[in-house]
Picture (tube, rainbow, N blue to C red):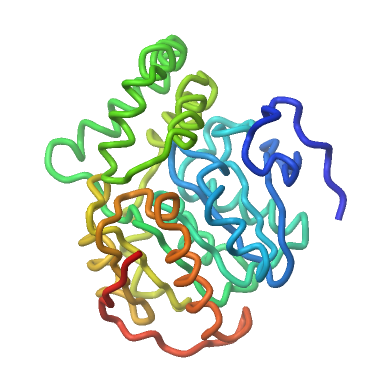
Length: 309
């Protein structure tokens, strides 16, 4: 399997940098980190994050899985090649093309927040279905009320203005602003994590990619098709999540035939960063009980199970 060298734009101190590869899979130039051994596990970060989000979880899974961790197009160190392909459907199609080009067949897909929606949409695009999907604080609900009308419009206007990303990066990239942003998720992130998020938020290209993704993100089609998704799904929720309420995952699981929810007390939206060991254990146990990709697995009970660090 041939890769381009580590992209020069990845900082020397970036987490798991030795695993970084540049892969040109049109229309994007992807930054992908590959590590571990065993069945392939695809990890998809949420909007505004990057592969660094897996820095605590990846070492715990790498002994059992080959981990493939891409930066989403336009975010982190992936460079988007078509600004009109950052919505859910187009991104899933381009992600499927990336996997096919590398002959990667995921046994499982793990997605955080918007990455969980992408994981579910991706199962509809893959010729060989994964054995299971894990959604961590899955963002599967539309904005309610007036915000549901204004937010996508606002994001679209911001994304279309070339002056916005550098101004936003300059204003929002301060220590206090990043600390408040992370605190609003309900998670407790260590100083190193805050430093990494600050670096991302200070990058106008990353901000621009995130805004463009938010402007194009449409979930109505996926939400309507949830009952038809046959792949077993495990939703992991943090009881203190103030970004995406746990009820979002519970509502989605109730509409699906092969989904269940585990809630972890005392954790927030970034549960995989603040409680990586329990998340790793839940992912491993879930996938261990499933059949091989492309074959039906056991039916997980559609109920909420307590959990915790």
